[in-house]
Image (cartoon, rainbow, N blue to C red; front, side, top):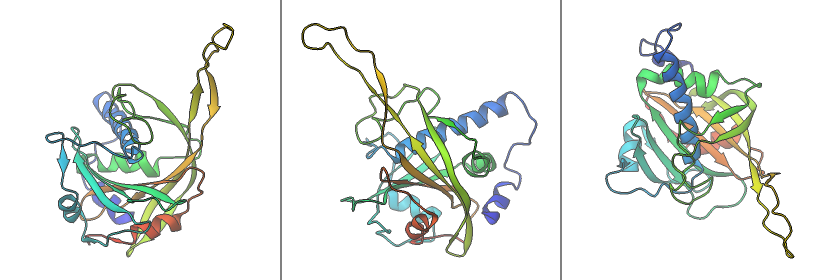
Amino acid sequence: MSEAETESDSGDAPPEGLAGGDRASALRVVAIAGLLLLLAGAGGLLLKPGDGSLDPQDFLSEVFAGIDEPLSGDLTAVEARRLPTGERLARFAAPTPEGAGVTELTIVEFPTARGATVLKEQLSGLSFESGKESSGSGRGRPGGDRGGSWGSWGVKKERAFKLQEKGTLSWNGFDADFVRLLHKRSSTSAGGDRAGGADAQAGEEEEAPAHETIRVNLSTGGRCLVAYLRFEEGYESSADDARGVLSGIRPIE
């Protein structure tokens, strides 16, 4: 979004060409972004007192002019939290999924000082040759792609994705940059001993159902905000799907 990117580039972004710490910072942004996408598909963050929990309405009223809940797809804000690295996020989900279409929406506010870097890594810098993103620097998926707990925290994994589309969509008077990604996972089928004492079977890679996500730049009001929409497995999403959900979120002008 031109207005958002102008704000992000107004002096908060680190200058180009620096080595060492700046490259490490950029890698950290990519790692955190991977974690946030996993949170969007986690189905529940299992928040506990003192772990960074926030009141969703307090956070959302601070960064947007208003939200007309429920959003398209019967999405309502169910939880919010602050990450140790400074990001704040709110997750929307439907009480009862309506079937094909959007299943979750996560709004993430990144620290303004990293705004330009985040927008490049998450949106404008993606190309159709992009291939993999990490799920976090040493941090694994929080209980898998659906539900569960934080039991696998500390396990580093990678997910393959393919850029399907990038462009801009109309969002309440703004032209918002977006990308649409196809995520493919592989599941390992680990065979056991067959009846009669046969040799144990080696794990084999099997194709798991793919799903799409859409990222949208909602940065307004001097804040770096990115929306992550996750869609049902096998559903081919579109910019219109994202526009329909986000139309109920009014930006600060």
